[in-house]
Image 1 (tube, rainbow over the protein chains, first blue to last red):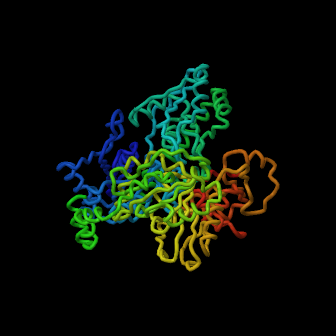
Image 2: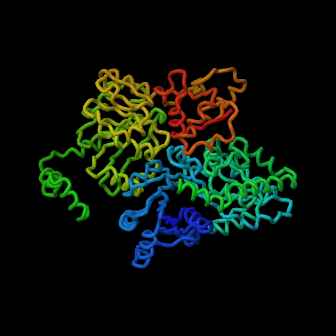
Image 3: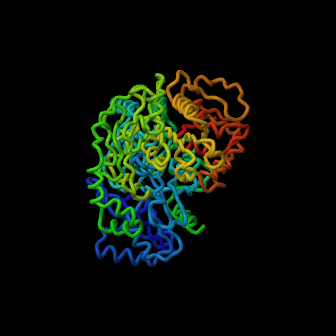
Length: 318
Length: 322
């Protein structure tokens, strides 16, 4: 089966990873994006992807790929230039639309699938909080690489905490990521020397995952009731993963990965974050290692890239 | 407008093309009396929405009192003064010092309607920075009358907490189902009973008086109140020992599930299907009073309709499972 992924931006490597791991399980896949991230993130999320900049060469490559493809998998939104090329050169059976986390909670919950000149045969939605907005779409789990370095045990007594709120956009129901209360709690623990706080910035997805592997705890956002890709990366890195994922976010993940076990996330809210952080930190080291191993075991059982790539293939075919 | 789009417009709608040509605009401008000065001095007008302009939305920074009762009404820019505009004209005449109709709570946004297709408008809105400034998220309610219902989606997306109140009369009985999904409260006159497929909270009005009192009620429902308690919606409401604590935390809905089958999610293929398979396992639902009022037409009766949970979750309800 030949699958071409298309997206406007690199979408934090999500389509790139799908394409990469589909290739590993016997399919043939490529990912084209139209515009890279600006500034420090440029070139960091596109390891497995091809830049379609509209020039003669990239157009020629894309035309060939479209012509050969069985499935076109469109992520979030693509420009009319690309939809035109699809309609000219693609004669396969399926064009799939896949909605991710759009950047702004501006016209966020508008249905972009209806705004592109494409006839979609299947509709996918990333399996975090978004299925409740796209209620008839099939939830799909993002594919995260397996972090090989996570076998290293942290010998130092002070747990390393990785906390990198992605942005400080305010307002909206699902936008907020940084919590002042949580920031204060984490900073005070760090000042007291009870944790070693790590806040790396602008790393590539592979670099960040490896870095996560030498940490003990990953903290995702705790405000909205969703979890994000970093929670999955935390499991891959064998970290204790802290978030405030609600019932429906967890159930949608179980649906997407075909599991009747919920992921071993450590639940914490703004109201109890002081207490919960202390609880994790004061957990005896042996027990911390057990929790970390539980994270890694869950990842291996349900979230391994090969397993999720095969699941994706099934969903293409079903 | 690009040459290509002009040519397309000439092909698709030649009549409109000639109406819109510059020479016509020039002539019509000469004939019109100068009304802009009058409009700008109207204290309730906060700005203008123009989908054909470079800055789609221009809003003056005005202070808002009683934000939770505040309302924005879309008014056709062709209407000379607000007193002549439908609905808001009536509201202003019948204000009676109601908290929601005072000078710093009730505002109007003038709209220059566009001839562009909905899809073109959508693309412009997505790309336009003026839409993302947060200026539109200050209002608790947005009232859309008649043809402006098509913009419901845009106002909903600019502010997830907004209540969209739509008013239709007999001449607009072909309201597009697509736009209905983004409306919270719908008022229509009696001749349309049973015609519009809308279920969230629908009311009919006989005359201006009943419409105004209906609007007043909806604005009061969403406004701040001393208590917004969890009230039973479905199931036997037993004594819950920690109800005071639950009322204090930030959840909007409380759901009791009897023995959740661990593989329930595996039998569904979408959120929608999941909710339907979950419903038989739910024994109790409590909801904040303000939220129950928001879905008034959905939560009557003894059954728990899947659409109640689907709508509430889509609108961002925070759910606590016990």
